[in-house]
Structure formats: structure tokens, C-alpha cells
Length: 288
Ligand SMILES: [Zn+2]
Image (cartoon, rainbow, N blue to C red):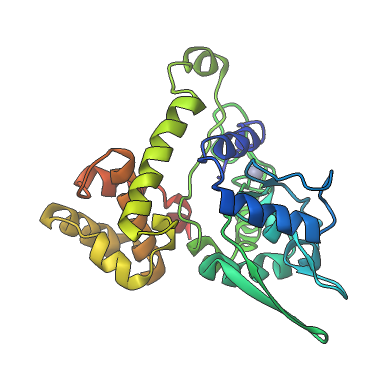
């Protein structure tokens, strides 16, 4: 999410956690085990039944995020398994931390190797990052002027590398709303209503894969088979691709997000509007 300070990015990240389906009992056990091994479980024998929402500070170290130490203690990424890892002010995190997220984000699992052995960790996490459009935060703002030079803006955005950005399924702009927009913007759906649609879409995905798996976790081959476009969709994708120079990775992500948009719409096939919606969620690719 890219937007100026005060545009409600943190609020949105928390709302996102609220539209995720309830944990299955298996997921609930896994989350509880991780919290227990990190020494964070309060009350013996208590099962964690809500999806985790972890929001580490940008000063966090690689060990803090990924995990580490003598006895290999799970980091924030692992504690967020089956839930949300919110990285507020993404460009402020150290480059080391940001780059260490690349492989787990891709594979949804990772291995820590220490002298005393190796541990495999799950990382089925929705990672949400937020950033300002520029260091001062007001580039493109309707109400305030940006005081940054082009070099400062470039340096700031460059801290989040292209390959890391590429791994985000959705890239959106979050503009600051003025008073009028805030006042009249209450005709939107509540989280409860959206949650019902998410649960239905997830059920469809479980039927599709015959296991607890989401569209985001499709392999390259599955993406090819399951995310077929009609001729209209194909030609739209080709036109946008020739213009935007998206990566091959972005190509598959665009298709998977379009499949999810179709699932949310209860549509057996990906329609051109689902693809168009998905293409809108690559705003940062366009700026690079
Ligand atoms: Zn600025």
C-alpha cells in the first residue's frame, strides 16, 4: 500500500485481518505450536483460534523477522503463519531484512541452518507492506506540497527492490481522503459482508485443489491450467504486457489474482473485467 501519512494504511491492514476466514483446527494447532516454541503462549493448554496479526517495528533484525539464536527461536514471519505480517514503513526496514523475505515469500516455507541443526519453518503468511509515496509523504497529495527532490524519491523507493516488489500480489495506492469524502464514503460493505464472500471463495479453492490451499499458492503449471483467459482477455493481457514490461513472475501473479477476482464474483471463468481488476493492482510495477 502506498499512500501519504494519515491515509489509513494501518487501519486497512488491520481490516484485512478481519476478512480472513476462521482458522481450521489444523491451522490453529500450528499457530499455537509456534507461539509455544517462541515462549509466547499465555496459559497452558490454550489453543490460539484467531489469525495472528504481527506488526514488527522497522528496526527489527533478520533474526527478529526470520528467526535465529542458539536454540533457533521463530521470528515474526513464523509467528504470523496463517495470518498477517504487517510491515509498516516498508522502505525503513534494513535491506538485509527485506531481501531475507524474498525466498520465504516465494516458497511459503524456509529453512534455518545453524551449527546445531536445521529447522524447516512454515511461512503461509499474507505479508502487507506500507510506504509513503516519497520521504516527506506528500507527493501527489491534494492538500500539501511535496518537498522532496527526484533523487530523494528515487532513493526512497529504491530501498524496496524490484524482485521484492514483484512478489507482492497486490500493489495499491491509498490516497488521503478529505472531510467530504470521509463523510460520504460510508456506503461501502462491512467486514462481515466481505468475510462471507471470502469464505465462499476459499471453499471454492479448496474444492479446486482438493486440499487447504489458496489461488496464491498455485504452481506455474496449475496457473497455466486453471487461469485460462478467453480471447478478449488474452489480447488485453498482451497489450498491457507489451506496454508495461511486467516480469514473468508478475504475469503469473496477475492471472492468479484475476482467478481470485472471478472466485469472489462466483464466476466459473475469468472474465475480462476480472483481469482488468487484477491489472489495476500493479501500480508500483508501473512506476519502476
Ligand atoms: Zn515528498
